[in-house]
Image: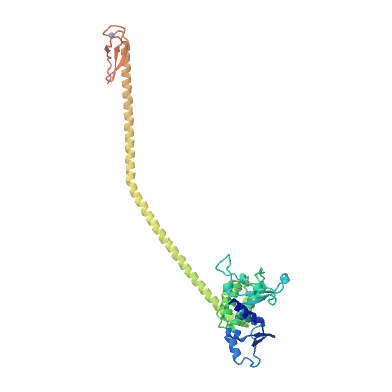
Length: 389
Ligand SMILES: [Zn+2]
């Protein structure tokens, strides 16, 4: 299939079996009816109807410029189209440069954002394509130059329009896709450039167009703050007879967008209020349950507090009782101590044993609550008069 496509592509500049001549802007294109008429019903009608000069088989094309027509033919033969870039002074050393625009399935994914096809991956830069084949050419660095980007954007508009004119939906979709990808080059807004693109769109597309016109309308409505602030732009658009449709659609679009914004805002406000109400309800519920918990805890705490009071009083009472008991014990101890001391003094006072009559040497022995003294010689017990309980 690739070889077949390549062979058909090679026929673009090969007049050998060409059987139709399309003349445009002083240039003549020798093409093959089998190829071009099978793609475009409009060309088919032109070739079989009264437009064709029967003997010469010539179609005179006067609607679009020669470059745009050439791009359409390139697309019919090769499935893509090329745009010559305007080189600025710094780039002049590179010679003539071309952008090649191919269908989406050639577009690689941008590494940074896998959902967004990156247009620049699909653009190949070339020297004059008469000297090199497309296949030899590789992606080079892309110098983003505002004026050349606008030129390219305008060329996409023309390609879109000629595709619409000749009923080539594939080409129309491709040009629209590249317009969508490239429309950001209109930012930041430059009035002259925007009006140029608006004129290109509104003077080349039919009133029934719902794609490219919607695309630029959406863009302008998105940028309404910048555009409406600028009296010059509004006046220039209103005064431009080619932009009457745009003016009307723009005003209508602004009204719709304003309405949508208002509805969205109202909806957001309602949602915010509802969220707040929900929050308040939730918080008051939480507050209510917290209060019940506090009340329940206080109820549980009441007997504990009562117990605590009782324990305190009891502790106080016991503590007093203990003090009294301690005092009693001390007093009792003192009293016993004194009595024992008195007993010992009595034993010390005995001179002779009451039984053996020897000098009274004695030892002490427990007896009842106090003591008795036993004679060392005969162990006879000697009692004191002092009673110990
Ligand atoms: Zn004795």
